[in-house]
Image 1: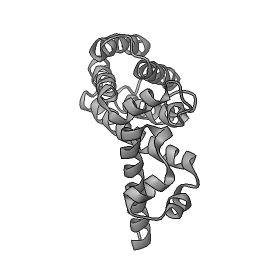
Image 2: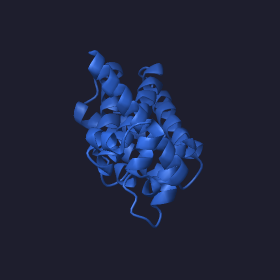
Image 3: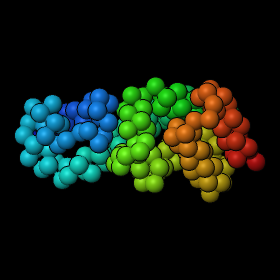
Length: 193
């Protein structure tokens, strides 16, 4: 990576971190590009140059958060090797518990109720990035640890579980541990020949 690329990456990181902090404090609707610039110590035009508009910043913020969750899911799955129940429970449980305690997700869900919050769709109607990343991680794990499983079945199981987990993040119906147990049972049934 060149010096220029490194500096640009640092700038993007600082801007996304500032946007994250402001979103946690004010909700996404309360975040202004000028506020992000001020918090990161750059001009407002720099923020626009980097992301285009507030929607581009929202996408970068969502992608960064999704990357962190997906990395944790990857680790949880692989720590348990081919044990579908243990790997699934670890990954699902971690995701639900982290989401329940994640201040950005709380801010997104809280500020989105009754407003036009731009971040909520990254968990719901515009969740392609999340679905693709999480489903790929499950597929990679299955490819390594469950090589005899039909990849089409794994893909359907993975996408189904990811959609169910996201649904329970957005609108929980019981404690995360209980939900994780229930969804693990579903995953085991989907992946057990």
